[in-house]
Amino acid sequence: MRAVTRPRYGSCYRIRPGGLVDGFYYVDGRRTTRALARLADLARDGQGRKRTPAQLDKAIRRLWDEMHLALLAEEPAEPAEPAGEPAPQPPRIEALFGAWIDAAAADKAPGTRAYYRRTADEYLAAVGDHPLPDIGLAQVDRYRASLAGRALAVASINIRLQNLKTFLRWAHERELLERVPPIRLLRREQRLARVLSEDDVAAWFRLLQAIRRHRPGQGPVRLPNGTPFHPNRKQRRSAALRERFLRVAYDTGCRSSEIFHLELRQFDLERGLLRVEFKQRFAIKERREKVIPLTRRLRRFIAALRKRYPEERYLLDDGRGRLAYTSPGAFAPQLQRDRAALGFNGRGVKLVHGFRALYAHRLRERGAPLDAIKNLLGHSDIKVTEGYFPASQTRERAAVALLDGL
Image 1 (cartoon, rainbow, N blue to C red):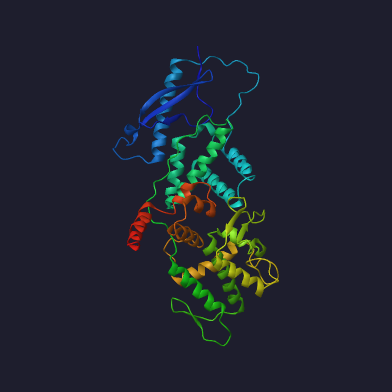
Image 2 (cartoon, helix red, strand yellow; image 1 turned 180 degrees about the vertical axis):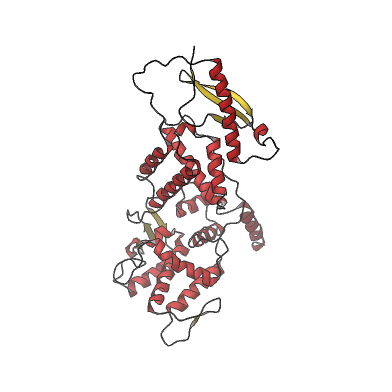
């Protein structure tokens, strides 16, 4: 008589795309599947009330337990023979999360690894530790529901789900997982790119120049919201550094992490090139070097900096050849205060990404090919670059531009 044994690990059912709930058990090490019920029949309890995901999970497990007892009654188990070595246990997902994050340390930036760790911690808090082969639609749906319950943005939820998919593919490539369960991302509403306008940029530079040029004894600087502001020496120096930072962002489209640690020697003014170098202390996103042509305006700006401050080494120098800030995170609050004073809050524009998107739009409006913009921005996939130009916006701009040619 064959022995019908329940697997040692937790989940014993799966939900197929058609809504059919299957239970499965193991006979002589092979998995056998039995249909349990349709998902629609289990969606409501005996009183007609809709079950929550946790109640639905409990009802399916109870149904499987009843069927499993019936199977045991049909086929009584043979007495277990003394085994030599215990069967190997499937790997636990918590341990594999740690191995995945350690493996990512070789080719991923510290921020990416931190996001992987956050995804792992949130999954374990929502679903718990379990053997890796148990993962399926039920576990993914439970994790997605826990993220949605925290009122996270759709983009934030999709990033976490994409990280989970990356982990499962990593496990599948190492033959630790038979198949990767389908993970559906949430559908995002198509919106125009969040770009700073030329007027926004001009207002930002005017504010920084007014603070930088202020001298003791002069009247207060009037912020755009009408608040009087008396900058001290440290605040004037900070405004000068922010102006440097934003001018490079405006004319190169670089990321914040790429601009923060730039040295003035990386600006090759003779050839008109900026060499963005990878440094272990300040890891950039692509973890590779790239070369960006300089505009004439930026070349004049950097040349004036070198002439006026020959002892400075960094773009964000403290005046003594050292970085004025310990990290991009320490520099960001300065930009956030500017954004609040200018009234940019609530518009969904990221601190530096608004300049990056504006750089891409300026190139596109002047006829630059999409593949060239992709290389300048450092995107690995041209679909990411296409996301900067929603079809509705680019076509409308192109249609109106036809009028200029009349």
